[in-house]
Length: 219
Image 1 (cartoon, one colour):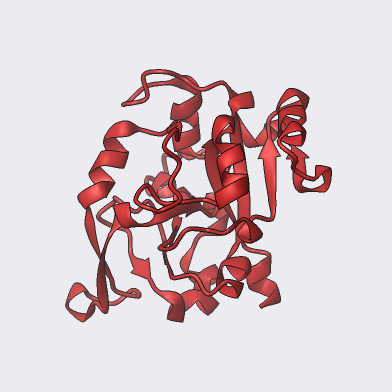
Image 2: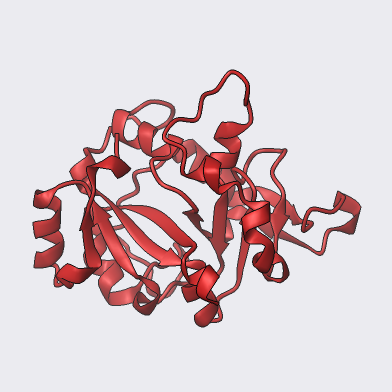
């Protein structure tokens, strides 16, 4: 499990959602503990599309050998990497994000594959952006091969446009999808943009040892 403990998962959240998360964990919209005042920062059209988007869990096999079918909107998505194309849109605006969010209001919540497994949560993962037709979906049985399935060089890439690799952007946005609410005990730490954001997190009662300030995770 040590290897999977080092495969970190990242979810971007508006800082105003942190107090609720510290009390209830990361919750689904339909959860009994859902945040009625949740402040979304992502692409509204993409979020709506995922609500009904069905995908097949194939573990890399042809579609006729699919072992399950899920609806993306029923899962809490994490990225395997940071500084994603979605973060760029959140910070700069565009697409269906009419109001840019300043970086000091964006917090990364960090967990790990190992921590999710320790809590026996149901999950699936992908080798690219979940809404892309070329992306394949995998279940728990394939997790030991995650380093062969997910392109971690791509997920950690600073940029995602290369003339000789038109698929880089899709692979960079590989996802880890969790079915249940994530308890607070699943959270390893928080990454923020600057000291002002750090001070707000401290005021929320977060242990200083759980907070990392790193502007390189932002644009």
